[in-house]
Image (cartoon, one colour):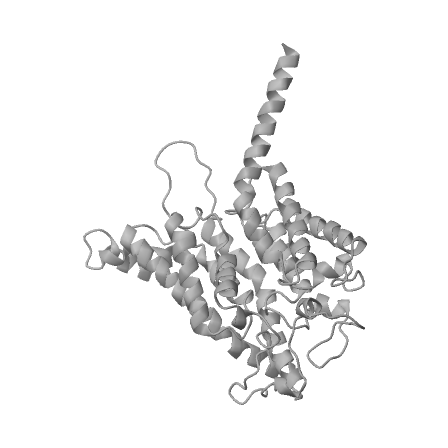
Amino acid sequence: MLRKYLDRVKPNFEEGGRLHAFHSVFDGFETFLYTPRTTSASGVHIHDNLDSKRIMIIVVAALLPCLLFGMYNTGYQNYLGSGLQGSFWEMFIYGFLAVLPRIVVAYVVGLGIEFVVAQYRREEIQEGFLVTGILIPLICPVETPLWMIAVATAFSVIFVKEVFGGTGYNVFNVALVTRAFLFFAYPAQMSGDRVFISSSPICGLGGHVNFTDGISGATPLGQIAAFAGGDFHLTNILGETLSSWDAFLGLIPGSFGETSTLCILIGAVILLVSGIASWKIMFSVFAGGLCMGWIANMCATPTYPASFLSPVDQILYGGFAFAAVFMATDPVTAARTETGKFIYGFLIGVVAILIRTYNNGYPEGAMLAVLLMNALAPLIDYCVVQSNISRRKARLKLKA
């Protein structure tokens, strides 16, 4: 019935129809629901029903474990800090209501701009924001004001994506630039010990987290950055000691989509089995992080003793695992040569831990590491290609 209805109203959106000005909008919805029927008129082409929209939908499906667990953890941290007892569903509903407005704002602003640009250019609506729209709230603190998310999303979509030509042409990861814009434009609202814990009651659910009563919502990496000497151990919002298992499950403060390494690994399996993400990039990011984590332990500093985090803990805390699986593997902004993928990923892992351990002013380095390597990815590919050319020339000379 839906297919027949679309076929019936489609002529209205074609050239000459009374709604032809909205052709891009109709085409965007139709191709989201159904595989396009258009095919090549001539030439040799490989046809596959797994188009870019389907790829984006699979990536969104891979993000769902992080999103759903993040909603629960948002409620869990609120109930923990307010001293209340709640069921699983009470905590989940609280987190759902706290997170949903941020997702809606990101999609409305981002897709709204893309629809307007597509109409202006008389082009098809690109599907890249299907993933970006869910990534943006996942990597932001849950207490980020909605208007800030709207401003940062608009800035990134316009100046990082559309100015460069739209989906497939951007140099930097759009979601990470949104996060970077928020961090550098509004640092007070994007860091500290209160922004990662939703503290307001919602529709009678949960309670108000009173930070003045000795409760701190600082992330584990934020606690390390604030280290001033003496006995130290990572704690949760109530001051209870955190374990590596807590970090692996994700029951810690942080950007709500980045805390659970378990859910991130589930998403990684979906991406790898479907063949969408590069295992070479994922593997090399983790390898680089573990190597740099080991070096950090061997070369401890007074402000970052080796006992703080083991190399494995470096992977579990912060946004490292999320960046390795969902950010570094972005096919548009990552390296494209096979050897370059190993180099690109390894350097992301190294730089992320390097920033985290030897720069006390910035406790998390994954975001900046990915953005830096986005800028260097074309250079990495160029060097790899030139190396291959030189090697083949040398081989031909030897044969001659």
